[in-house]
Image (cartoon, rainbow, N blue to C red; front, top):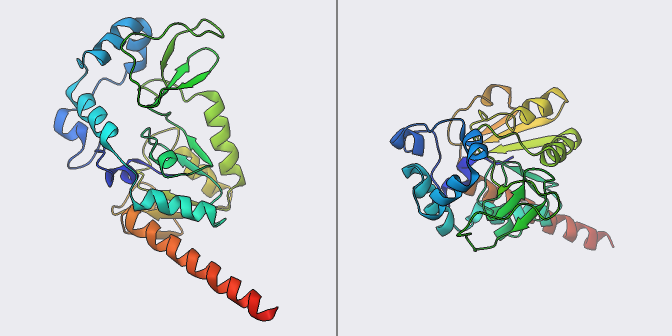
Length: 247
C-alpha cells in the first residue's frame, strides 16, 4: 500500500507535515462531497475557472507536472519479477500506471477519470480537462464527477471490495510512504496484521503503524524500493545460474 510519501519524490506535496498543503494553507472543510452534491454545476465552474481553494490549485498544477520516480519503476520491476502481487495506492496521480504497473487498485480514485455516482461507470480523460460539467451518466442518468474521492465521500463499493480481497490474500504487506491515518484505507493494514500477514513499513518518519510492524525501514520510497528491486533482480540471476549449472 502506498501513500502520499510515495508521490512526494515526484514533486507532489503532501497534505500534512512541515511543508504540507494544510500546514501552509489551513485544513479545508471536510464536507466537500456534500457541497458537490448540493451544487455540482457550481463546483465544476470553480474547477474550470481556477476559483478553487489555493491549496487545490497548487495540488492540481503539481499533479499535471508530475512524472514517475525510481520507486514507481521499482514497483513495476518487482511485479514483473513475480515478487509483488498487487498494489493498493491512496494516491490519485496515476503515476503507478505511467510506470507500467499492471495490478493496481486506486482506492481514492484517479484524477484523470470521471465516475458516475450511481452505477460506478468510469471514463478515462487522459490529459483532457472538461470545460463544462459532464452530462448525466448515459447508463443510469445519475451525476458524474471526477473519480477522485472527496472529503466526506464513501470509497466506491467495488473498489473497497477489491482492496479487501487483496488484503485477505496477503501474507506480507509493505506500507510505503503512508501516515496510516486516513480511514478506511489505513484500516486495511490493521486487518492484514490481525489476519497474520507480516507488515513492513518504508517511511522516513515514525507513523501510527510503526509499533505493529515486523520490519521498519527508515528511508524514502525511491531509495528503499530501488534497492529492493535490485536485490530481487540479483537473486533471480543467481537462481537462474544455479538451475543452468545443475542441468
